[in-house]
Amino acid sequence: MKTTLLFLSFLLFAFSATSLLVAAGDTLDPVLDIDGNELQNGEDVIRVSTALDIVSLNIPFYCRQSSIWTLQGVFVTMGGARGNFSRNFQIQKYNELGNTYKFIYCVDNAACRDIGPAIMNGIGPLTILNDPLQVVFVKAEGSQIKKITNG
Image (cartoon, rainbow, N blue to C red; front, side, top):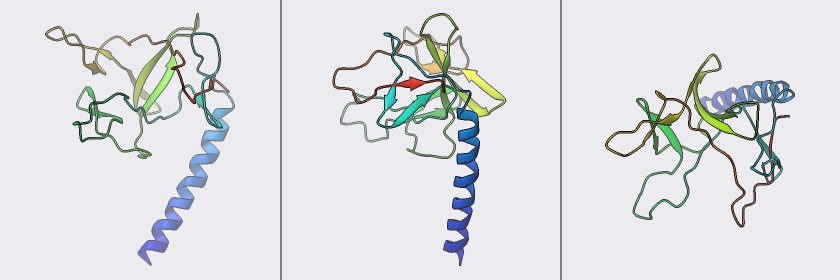
């Protein structure tokens, strides 16, 4: 009985979340690489202001934790879970001129904070306390990503 209720609750959530995302997706801009091309992962287009799992690559093999971003206090760390319903990282335009972006962390849709480095002892861990870090996307050699899009 509990399994059935859990499954039905999940389906209800999935259908309601999907309709909200589709409705919101009509107005979202694509994320562009440095050449102005839309980034795309397979058939899914990466859209600004969409909740994301952000994964750090080239992590040393001796690091046993997940390389997915999560938040501990004000610091961005690794150790998050893929597909977690509390994914709160997003990509937004840094400014309307050019193809520059920033990462943000949202507690809910109304309370989003910029992510930027906090320089301490010459090291700049990412936090939600500072000015945003301006980023430009460049296609990595051998990358499967094709587009990031607004709509």
